[in-house]
Length: 324
Ligand SMILES: NC(=O)C1=CN([C@@H]2O[C@H](COP(=O)(O)OP(=O)(O)OC[C@H]3O[C@@H](n4cnc5c(N)ncnc54)[C@H](OP(=O)(O)O)[C@@H]3O)[C@@H](O)[C@H]2O)C=CC1
Ligand SMILES: CCCCCCCCCCCCCCCC(=O)OCC(=O)COP(=O)(O)O
Image (tube, rainbow, N blue to C red; front, side):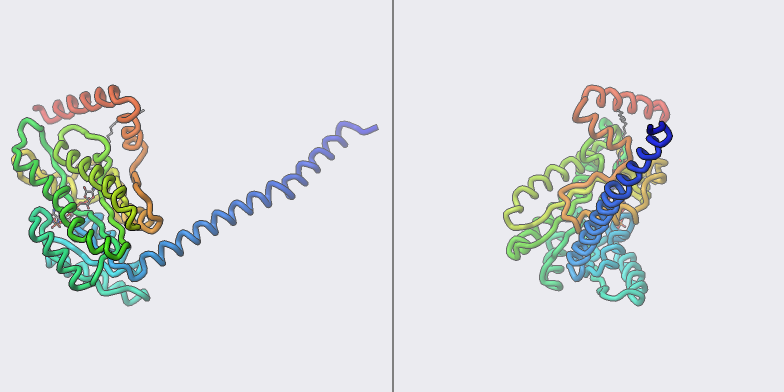
């Protein structure tokens, strides 16, 4: 007669057998496949970026500066664009100082121009093509933000934000696109924002420019697929940069406040790494934000009425705080 204790021992033994013959090999196998997949992804990204000509706008600070460091370290030939030649020179020195420790890095190029002046944008694109022959990856990163009520904001301010965040980047993209089409090769990145997908009060010009960016680059992606040109739209949430400090206000003056949300955002280096991986993996779009902004994006699409109510109450609260 088999006792209950003996039956239990047999069952335990079978379970251990099953664990060691099925579950453990399955787990190890999955882990191995995952590690191999990540290794292949890493190797593909490295091969894609090594020696690639990568043009980055707004390289003088924040996310653009960190992208410059990340792509330079990955072995790309970075072309740093900005308005301030001194800041660009300092960045080149910083990158070249790191170069001594790393193989396969290239001396960065710099191009000085203002994105809000379309003529200089086209000249800059020509200058880059003359100097380097082609562009593999264009990262449209530069931008400014805005704080103000719609009723108080002059149209010149709306235009300034649109010129910098929308018309400048699209003019630059259009100027470089024919050479990419000719080579049937290229990758265009637009740094948009969560506010390219949802609009929050007192950011009208900024949210409008980012919605326009999203729309333009979505159209572009579809139109250039036949030439094997990639388009990646990156939509970050708050990043610890000078964006809010440099934001323009209703009368065109500088906002000059480091918002708490910005100060508590992700680091620019973290987001730059996400941009680099998204490029390497040829992602079509990436939302790089915390849970609340991501939920807000879904809410806007799935339950717009609730989203609009939340935004109206946010506007009311913000007005009360400012006493206006
Ligand atoms: N910080 C955040 O919370 C978020 C930022 N983003 C986006 O990230 C991008 C980078 O911004 P971020 O790094 O945060 O902000 P920063 O203010 O730190 O950097 C903005 C960059 O854009 C450049 N720039 C501004 N205006 C012009 C112009 N007219 N012509 C040429 N360059 C110009 C600035 O140059 P200069 O040094 O000369 O001023 C600077 O290099 C922007 O597109 C922004 O909308 C998206 C989501 C969140
Ligand atoms: C089911 C629960 C849903 C919860 C939804 C709550 C909705 C709350 C709104 C949250 C708004 C988040 C806004 C995020 C905006 C953002 O990340 O923008 C990034 C920027 O571009 C920052 O620029 P700014 O100049 O505005 O600092």
